Length: 360
Ligand SMILES: *[C@@H]1O[C@H](CO)[C@@H](O)[C@H](O)[C@H]1NC(C)=O
Image (cartoon, rainbow, N blue to C red; front, top):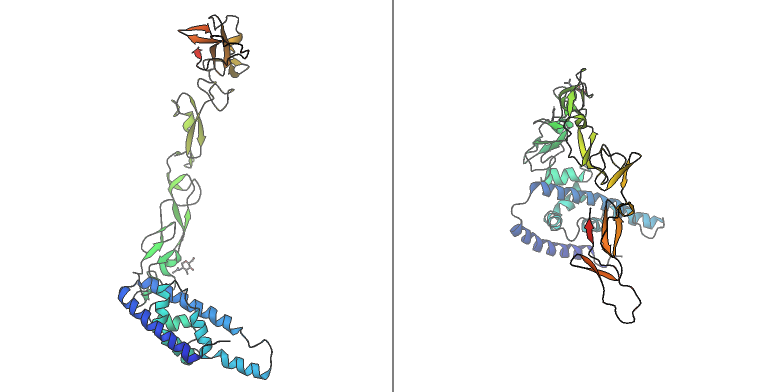
């Protein structure tokens, strides 16, 4: 049940309108014509939604003759109009509230006098009455036809600036692949599959073509970088990896890809390689040896000639290298491993010196 009656509601409404209208006149002298139409479109969309949702309201859910009469009276009532109008804008949308409040009379006029003859509220209100929108395919103050005509603006291949609004300049922003004032031309990398004065279909060229006149790699006018023409005049991938010298550095191997190539680091066991892994080495890096085609670490510590020759020194093998450390209980001093001062009654051996002396 509404606690405020029709006339009271209306008075409240008018008071709030007057205040807001004043505010906007000051702050919004020059308003964006495109966004005014968008706002108007939202308003009329919400009006239609509100119209539908209030249609389902009934008085108690029964079907008595009294309720039927009451319902049919409500359908065309001012109360219903007010309920719909209240739901037209988010309270935070200044532009929307301004527009509704400025033109509230028009909603009343339409509701009571024009609805039957002009059922399309958007057309009647936004286009014909407050003139912030234009019919589809037209733009600007006088609703002139977009470039390419109002039936299919931009020949269906782009967006007309200001389409459907009183703003914009009617020019085309073409969809991807299309070009030119009328969006009938194709950009480089696309070709006209179909074309006449009013219709154009641009299709992407084969990935090997810079420009083309058909879809395959034999239809290229010019090959893209990384591709070259073969005997059959088709664009084929250039194998950069078979070039001499190789485009990669010495510690890299080359991988050919369609239209390009990449360089990847060799395994650290390799000195030069043909692929990934220690089994693709051209030669083994120092500290590694060839074991049945794979470069593996040399264990310098287990060679017959000892490599750590100082007294109280131990050899520790690492990947590709070895290090000589002082044995536990000794530390390095002036290049020699000298005994640590024995702490009294401490049995625990000291950890080995952490600054190893590396040798190749
Ligand atoms: C242009 O081509 C389209 C699509 O093939 C066709 O519908 C249209 O009638 C053609 N127009 C002219 C003027 O030939």
